Length: 396
Image (cartoon, rainbow, N blue to C red; front, side):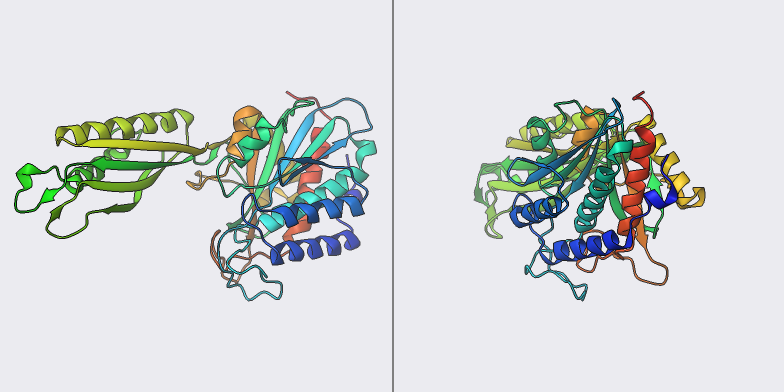
């Protein structure tokens, strides 16, 4: 096992990581547009003499091969993209790209993984097995993780387990939140096109009112949560956008509604897709109209594997102290496409707290979201510690 000195991030590396984070924060790029971000990550690896491979247009991964014999193949993922948000933090190193901001901490995730790569590469003589460190684009968009999986990022050789963290403004600074089972929800989108028959409001019997049909659908959809779902299982069915009609005295012939569903089990996710389609079509038919449902699967729920989560929890307690590691009581209904990895291999996704006492903690995706960069070496040491203790054991 590593000594405390071997585990600690040295001051010169710590300074370099702070510089890296500030550069990333100043130059955010949207999903699948992370060309400069990818080049910058590559330049850091080249400076350190660490080999890497490109995957897709803007993805990168590093394989650190242990020199101490065979062992597990563990993956770590960090997301590298930013959000279409205008920054309002007032930081000296605020975004230089108007309307684009690292408002979800991905600059921190990327920096932590770079630091972990550096540490593990220089400890490879003590490693068995292999560590694959994945810098993933497009987490805020659809299908990014799935695309890398299709490109073989979990193969050659096969990855046995995956880890990922997310900075979390709802936990105290330098604490860890773990969750067995589901930790984030699925996120799927739907579009409902209701088609009726246009006409004059003075002669409603000659028309089929798409607005009336839509109102019935809007009232019925919540029953999929209140009457069709297990009351102790969190489920969301939400319509957030609706449009239709052209004038006050015209019967609308078409209404379009857009919404989202969230669930924490794969079974409920599939059920909602089928039930929303069936419900809308049946209601429209009763009123003589038609409903077309376009249902788009986006992110699956992140369901943590018990044994990987236990390894992470035990390692975090060893490093940070039992009092600084919490079991989260409930999942977040937010989503993360890390769920695509968790569907393929045993995985755990955990929270690293960034809330500082006496300072406001703005939520993720808020234009004032920020974190103190002293959390970066903590994340590096945590990943390094968990990986090193695991790679002295076999995969269960």
